[in-house]
Length: 461
Ligand code: NAP
Figure 1 (tube, helix red, strand yellow):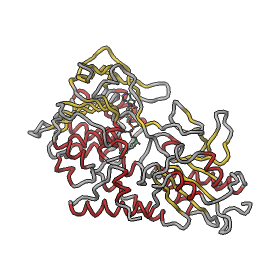
Figure 2: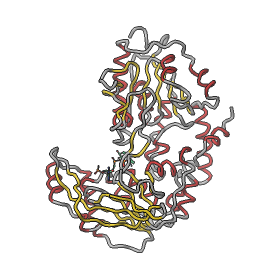
Figure 3: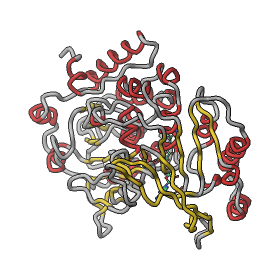
Figure 4: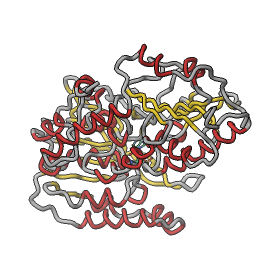
């Protein structure tokens, strides 16, 4: 390994982004025998953990317990956290080249995909990512406002993000009060007048992207009934043939819950969640610049030449009166300065995590893992194998000397000059302790700071 990766000359790696893919990069490097690695993890926020903190729903605390393993990784000798440092603002690719042998980008997928239909820009039309980041207290989204004085809301898309948004809108304030939802969001939801929530899927029950625990939970809400139109719950011939040809336990379970909900009578619960299938939005209809309805076209399923069940528009249309529309049709990565980017996929150009130029050549020193590498799919744990694949490539390349040749290893001085409010892992732990202590007093996992200035204010340094 050309003398690199030893106590005297450790392999120096910068990890940009402190979500699951970033932390699984650390744990995968920790498993490498006979390789001494110094890892610096960067995040533009003072807080680590990416979507585990700002994406995973506040009422799904179990999913957040992975941070205990991340905390352990952060104790690895040679690991440093540089929070409140933004790549492209406080630090450039050229800077990183001076201090590291390799850089891995684990920045996730930060924005939503659009629907590209008329009316998408009306007031009341929002992306699910904005709403999710808002209720999770992400500082960049804390000032957003959602007009929850409307009676009806439509959520377009049928993945687990759509389910999270639907659940947060459907739950009572009491069901959310013992979570770490942002205080302002809980207060806004306390005054919510939303009674009808529509979840709109463009394909049928057998193609829904949500997972069984999520759809099961919808049938167990304290003050919200769930309803499916019997006609839409009935499986069409194309789906039945597909299910027989490609048996899948999750699909069977999903279909089971949907069938049960279609037969369930309405009780006297205050809210109603209506799960619709085989409908696509064609326009958001406005009045005085605000959404007042969503126009839908009924779809019919067909099998494409790759054997996938797809939706095809019919000439049957309808209009649902709604005051808010959330687009939840998948996330997209954001291009990073100086890094080759695949615009239509919203990912960094790469081969198994090795960054490539647009003509397919490997770019020395650059790597990627997580959603920005492979697109926004899979659960938190999927990033473990994703990071493992990239770390393997990084180790192989290091062994072959395919590395940058850094000079000084004192990047911290440079960072502190550019960002005096640099946050270390110890600083984050102090912020964490204050949040958790506040939470204990209220019977909640934590009370989140939603402003960077408030986070900085509690530090004793
Ligand atoms: P997703 O699972 O990919 O779902 C996207 C949904 O949008 C699908 O129902 C898709 O329908 C629909 N869609 C796409 N384009 C559309 C269009 N033009 N019109 C109408 N519908 C459209 O994405 P996600 O919900 O953003 O979730 C991202 C990842 O995070 C997923 O892997 C998810 O499982 C994971 N996640 C997991 C949890 C959890 O474990 N509890 C929570 C949140 C997120 P088609 O299927 O027809 O394309």
